[in-house]
Amino acid sequence: FIVEEVARLDAIVSGYLAFARGETALHPEPIDPAELTRKVVAEFSPQFAQRQVRLESIIADSLPTVRVDRIGFRQTIINLLLNALEAAADPAGQTDRLVRLDLAASPRTADRLVLRVSDSGPGFTPAQRRRLFEPFSTTKTKGSGLGLFLCRRIVSAHGGSIRLLERDGTMTTLEITLPTGGPA
Image (tube, rainbow, N blue to C red; front, top):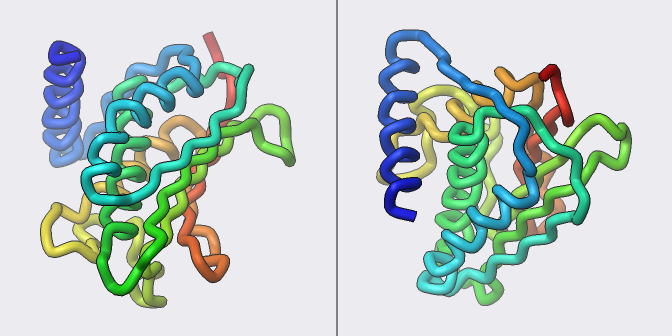
């Protein structure tokens, strides 16, 4: 675990430096998205418990492989989960603090994978929604404001998309769609 974390942190720092130079260095490989996502959820579950936020994950069985940069895809999931945790942990009178991660094949087309991360936090103002994926845009007191911007770059580089879904009254949802399989 420690060796994996050191490699991940090194890749993140290298990624930020590459970003600063205008480069994107991705190394796509076929991965099992369910396995990787389950590992991330298990790894970060203690942080949710510590902040008294319920983490639900619904990960479909037998998902097709995706051809992505393992470190970039993992970091994207982590960024979405931690952003949702921060939003849901906001103590502004919330009693049911919830983050839900759903991973499934697209119901619309068989060659796409859909990852959704939803939270019971306060949501975004219209101005925040307009700037959500811009660099250095943040709603937090700490942080660089590069998390969702880099998520969008990583997802786009893999032929996917990321978008904010309309708030359904109780949950704010970010949705990632990625092509499955991919060239060998």
